[in-house]
Length: 91
Image (cartoon, rainbow, N blue to C red; front, side):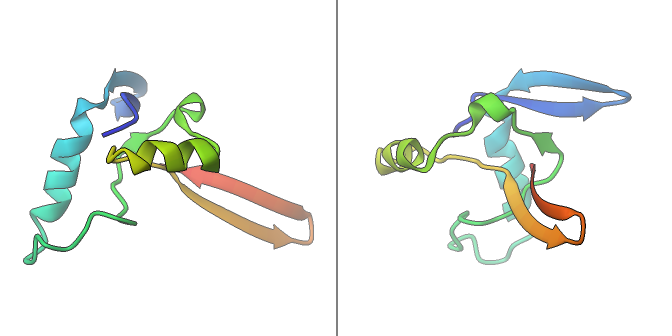
């Protein structure tokens, strides 16, 4: 799974940790699901932050996932109001 480095909140501090914590987090999500045959695509795992330098353009993203690597990405939202347009990504 990628990214290889993530940020977690420990008390009042944000700490970088190795990305090998992704699989246990995904296993934790599956622990609440009766049917483990459900794919992990488009599932939201909370409690982690992905650094902006660990995100890829769509062309690079496609090359990575075509090799069978699970790529964890932030949830991104776009909205518009009277003050302008906004794009926000959260882990």
